[in-house]
Image (cartoon, rainbow, N blue to C red; front, top):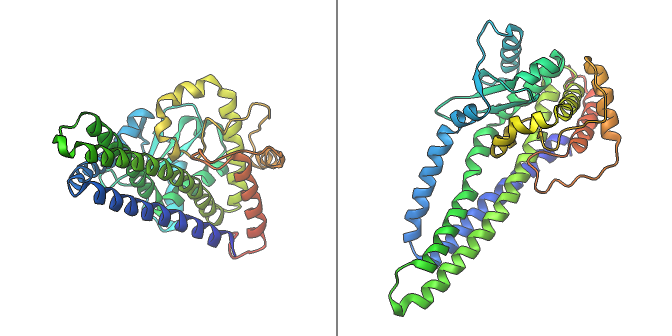
Length: 331
């Protein structure tokens, strides 16, 4: 079974579990309390959809994002246009985030349209070959439509959290007939318990989907950018080293944006290395990636939005070897 097939199967299974568990939980909750809760769930869903529509503008305010004008980094605009044409995706609006941490992210909603943002730190610290691989990764997210899927799915656990809070509040302070109060409180407490449990499980499934979608976007970069797997590995290694060298500056710049860090190509909290040197050549950065990936450190990713750096680099290195033997894939 190929890398892409296994990855697609894992993502599909995760989504099936997520959607199936959501439907089952709602059916159980509605059967316990009746259809009144359906109205509350619909109101919460409508509020969440509204938040999803305006989320790009919130993201831009938090990350200090502005449109990148055509006369700014014209080579970057050409790169996005050529990759978009090659990958058969609509050319996104190119944005610049005025922060020093090297990173990039794809985002958007039906209201804003697709957008790709690069940070000032990415443009100033990575070379063009590495930036091309990063852009291939971000366009991969748009090609898979996983930006909208991820942003929409992330709203569902919050719905169960709010239902749990409502049920808990109603069980403590709700006005009920004395004859119905005992059974009603039990039902509401049961709903609160189920909702909190479903919330926790959905968060774990959502985080798993977030990690898998990063691998999937890595694959798109690998097959659409010449020598894409090794260039992306080099880019991730450079990002990790520069982020580590920024230290407290990186923490301050992104402290308010932790809720949206799943959008980033690299998690600044875990993708930072302070012990390695770095160069201005992607080939040398790839050697750095090989050294980082060779470390035997075991990293736990159950509660992470991104795959562990070393595991991600190892997969890119294995993918590079696999694609190198297939000239039809590695151009």
